[in-house]
Amino acid sequence: MENKHWWKNSVVYQIYPKSFQDSNGDGVGDLRGIIEHLDYLKKLGVDIIWLNPIYKSPQVDNGYDISDYQAINPTLGNMDDFQELIDGIHDRGMKLVMDLVVNHTSDQHHWFQESKKSKDNPYRDYYIWRDGKDGHEPNNWGSYFSGSAWQYDKDTDQYFLHLFAPQQVDLNWENPKVRHSVYDMMNWWAAKGVDGFRMDVINLISKPQGLPDGKKSADEKYANVQPIVANGPRIHEFLQEMNKNVMSKHKMITVGETPGATPEDAEKYASLDNKELNMVFQFEHMGLDGNDNPALGKWNDKKASLSDLRANFSKWQEKLMGKAWNSLYWNNHDQPRVVSRFGDDSTEEYRVKSAKMLATMLHFQQGTPYIFEGEEIGMTNAKFPKLSDYVDLESINAYHQLVDDQHLLDGKTMMKYIARNSRDNARTPMQWDDSENAGFTDGTPWEKMNPSYKQINVKKALADPDSIFYYYQKLIKLRHDLPVITNGDYQLAKGNEDDPDVFAYLRSNGDTTLLVICNYSKKTLQRHFDVPADAKLLISNYADDAGDSIRPYEAKVYQY
Ligand code: NOJ
Image (cartoon, rainbow, N blue to C red; front, side, top):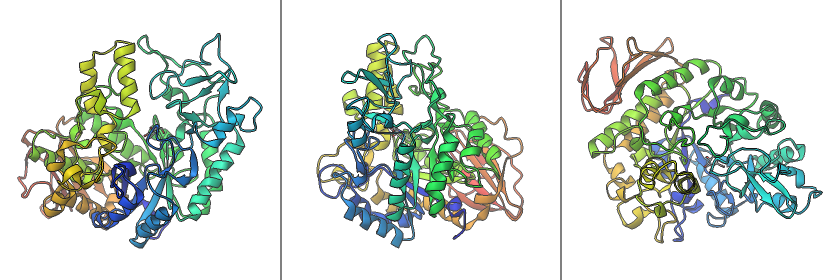
């Protein structure tokens, strides 16, 4: 579909390169490993491949700490491999989206190496330096990865800001030289053939004037920084400037990771007149199972209720309709596995049924769907039992802060929460087959394998016509074939407003109507929907149709 909004009926597949396929036995996935599987992705039918950061990086946060924006990290390959990868993607009619991490750089980036040398270094103002206040940090902001968001530098007697790890130093977007260096770098990648960018925490780049203290509860050691820095005062000016300098010059797709964005914010970031970005990647539905105590944040083990999910999905569908564009996702490299979190991995039958049901619930909405590697075969949380099994700094720091430092949780409870919510659940290597290390590597995997690979792997999925893989393949094909999925309006089915277990919605564009019915529970329920006699069953995760009787985790879609 060659038109201005070509990305609207596209499906994105996200690859976490370190965990996808190792081609040289060092235990770390690499670009040549991805090249080996391009036909697999083509078979699935996706249109766009998004790679998590592959640039040169000390890997403190797995590549989200970039030390050179114009080089490939040596463990992943080199520029020749990159060229072969992008050619391979384009030859198969797919597109490549790179991760753009420009809220911060690594402390090893030469800009920061210069910046920290002295207060009058020409790069000093590339970052956010402040004097301390009465011998303390300049304000009470907390880092996303625990502790203060400020790090003291004794050589120049000032603090620098890092919203994430101390080795991820926030760039000063108030400085036009920073902004134009970023635009030049983006244009350089576009000239290499890159088709777009996923922009890491892009709505955090404009900090509020004066960097004021934030509010915090009694249990919180530092203030949650998100409400203070998200959607800052100059954000739209910066993105419009970026659009003018970069996006408007290329046929490019852009998606902004925007934590804390509401539908009203999304209307500005991703309005259909394309002044800023093509779509947002927002987090409201990911927050529905968070802890009521703000000091514990995401650390919890509750399951989101269907009522909350339905209300949230419906709000986004209704508010953005005809105005702006959203990403549709259950999973990414920062989230636990969908089937363990929102579905049911307690039995093989329920794993398969609930994975397909959740895919159905999401893929018939308006927006651009994202599939995270392994989701298409129903990979589950690894649920590692010991802290030493985990690699991710977010989980490890949170344990130390909440258990050892603040004593807000006991170790056992925190390990239960980590097993459910750690980002490592998403990052265990891709499960290709049931051989040692799931065919991911001949060496020692950089992150432990999820032991489930003997049962859950690509080889098995491809051999079973009823697998989750082929269900996703069908969902993608339906999006390509049926315009109503892209352009239809959205409405809850009559009487569905308060149903605690079944989610039913309609999509309609005047020509075609789809009725989507999903049972979020393992109960068999009686529900009546007015299904016209000439409606045909388009897709279902059961072999037959039981009419008004809706079986455990059943999903079905009628077309009329
Ligand atoms: C969001 C990314 O998705 C996450 O993985 C990373 O740790 C932070 N941004 C910091 O770059």
